[in-house]
Image (cartoon, rainbow, N blue to C red; front, side, top):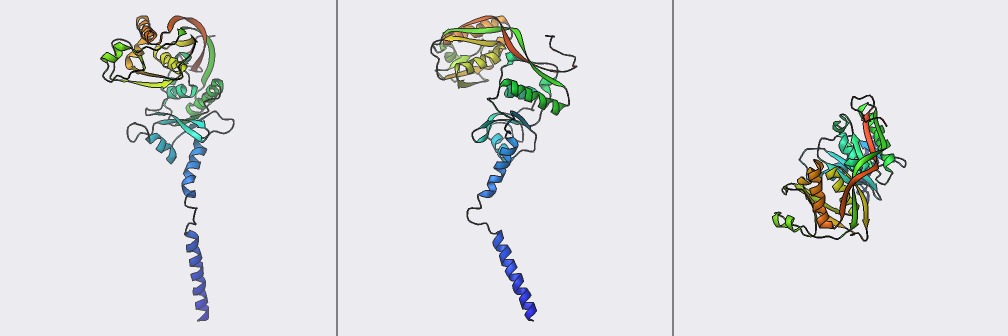
Length: 299
């Protein structure tokens, strides 16, 4: 009988000890939510000598929360672009499309379309996943890392190389002085004064966008609209920040010389800058597949 009571007492003590271990101590409750965050930082972060990383699904809880802050359709994984900030991976861009190599090339290079030549079907290669980039690494390091990743993902010999090319460019000269485009605001349904407006005629005010930044960042928008490199030779003081808005008609500036001239004249009227079309030798990145039917011309 004493033996039975002894065994029961031991079992009771073991049970109490086990139950006590399962109860979280004060201050330990906050430790569990930190684990997913650490996983996210580890997966979407970069090692010391790494400049670009591709992250396929499944994704972390933090990543899904970051993606959910946008305005994309429901039940779409899309793709996220992160850059490394002081506190780890920080959201750079979201994309709600199908995830193609051209989107990755554009966002990781941080170049405009006049500085890129993509050959064959590389532009439409599906790439399902996220990207992390060290934004302030040189473009050479970023592009070489991207070349290696695309080769691994596709099993194809993708070549990414820089060449100096004689190209049509637009030289911006003169001094900045902003004047509102009165004609645009008279006919626009939602006028926003004190903004540079980018468009051609006839306007398409129902679909568009906008942004804010420095003068070089405005020039980047113009480059993507015209497919011409902007050479900055502006003199004098520059505004610390510029706000702009555009509609889809600005992309007609790349279609022919008449539309390009119209686009530049509209912007010259607002900025007091002169835009000169000429030719210059500029660096251009070529992305092509070794042995493919469509290739860039020999050097």
